[in-house]
Amino acid sequence: MSAILVTGSTGTVGALVVAELLGRDQQVRAAVRQPGRERGWGAAVSEIRFDFEDPSTFEAALTGVSSVFLMRPPQMSDPKKMRPFIDAMTTYGIEQVAFLSVQGAGSNPFVPHHGMEQYLKRSGLSCTFLRPSFFMQNLATTHRADICDRDEVFVPAGRGKTNFIDAADVAEAIAVVLTTPGHLGKAYELTGSEAVTYTKVAEVLSWACGRRITYPSPSAREFKSRMKASGCDDDFVSVMGSIYLIAKVGLAAGTTDELQRLIGRSPTTLREWAQRNADCFACAAE
Image 1 (cartoon, rainbow, N blue to C red):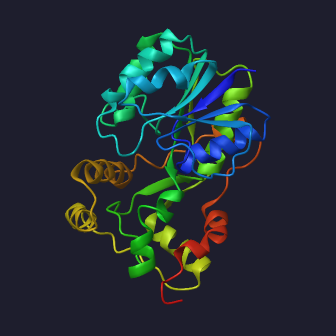
Image 2: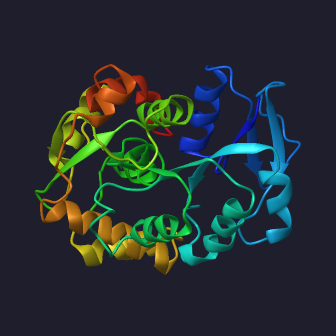
């Protein structure tokens, strides 16, 4: 059995993809920067040292691989640095690439994933593009400190609605795409079943956490100032600002049924996810 290479295998989505593929009895090759750490994956997962910016790691990663789950590392501000690896995938005859893109990337040239999709198309590789909406998990990572320390959801989205999606649902869809036929050349816009304002997000988190959490609706300048004060670099702040501008003008609210068709069930709701993850938002003093 040929292996499936999973890039970003220790991240939020990648680790879930590894688990989903293992549940389908697949051989998984996990691309990691530092092999040898205890991750509890078992014998069905082989770790391989990998770095998009180090071509010497490509041969070991791709030899004996039939399919690749590809995602852009969040810290990589210039996605053009991934092009040598895409070129290498063509050399090694990869049969399918499942690329984790973002909602609307097909028509939005301002997100880095748009250029990635275009380059993948030109490469001649057989690709499947998965374009999820905003991850619920971002609340528990990027915005966790504001929620825990200030009881605030601090994003400059105004009154715009956002469609949230559970990364676990996305990982399940990715596993389906990689292990069942009929997905080559397809692009799937993956969303949850509802779009909500960040005022509603704060209400849901308040309900789940048992304390009042607010949405102060900061300006873009206030958001940028706080993000930079927390140590975020300019490129990351710029990308996040663009994402929330899209939400503010009402372009992040669209829904589709493509996720449900892929995984065969209703998407996880924000309320369900918040209830399961309430402990993540506990105050330090609690």
